[in-house]
Image (cartoon, rainbow, N blue to C red; front, side):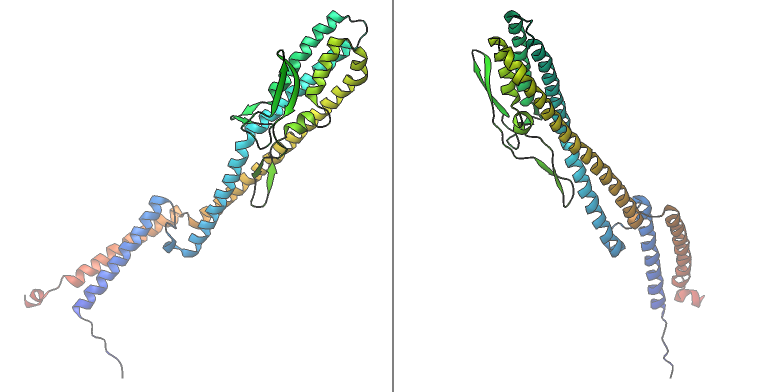
Length: 304
């Protein structure tokens, strides 16, 4: 036996109102998509793509943080390389002066004059070794708040320079699984194969003492070692800088790729959304017309 469903005026009205609310909700969603430019504005819009978008945003934030870590140490690397280059220039000048001083044709008065310039080169080396970037000592290891080297003076003249930092490297995160050192410690840069400070002090004192044999037999060899030592430190900093540049480029590419995928997941298609809104508005107008026909009749209409 067939089941007969009674359709009342109230049921027709309720269904008509439900259809209107459904069309209005659809129009509201499409208008929000046009206003924000996003298809997914909240997790309920598309739970799967919303979750994927959250993961992509986390990856983008991580990579941008790694980029920030790298860009933050660029001044440190640049100024470290600049100061080490200054030291190379100092060593080369000291080599020229020592070669001159080793010549037996020079008298003591001329050696004394060269000793004065060597003393100024020593002062410049100390200044370079205690250079600070962002108020942090660049050659002191992890003890960046204090000077990297302590200086002992007698009558205003430097007689000894001692390392006050430590041998620990400063590292930064460059990925989820990798860290890299971004410094050269002062004991390595200035006192590893040869103590550059003690060498310059020795050259100055040899000049003042007229010990040209020491200049020829000892100091010229030390100067060559000091040059190679400084160049090795520069090469280390250059290698770090090159690695960070490559990683930065990779991180930037990854962020662009993540952003493209994120856009595919949550951004609205403008043309499709406008078309959908037009269709929804047409459907709403049709529903309004239908509802008007359903609600309009009353008992008085039939009595007339």
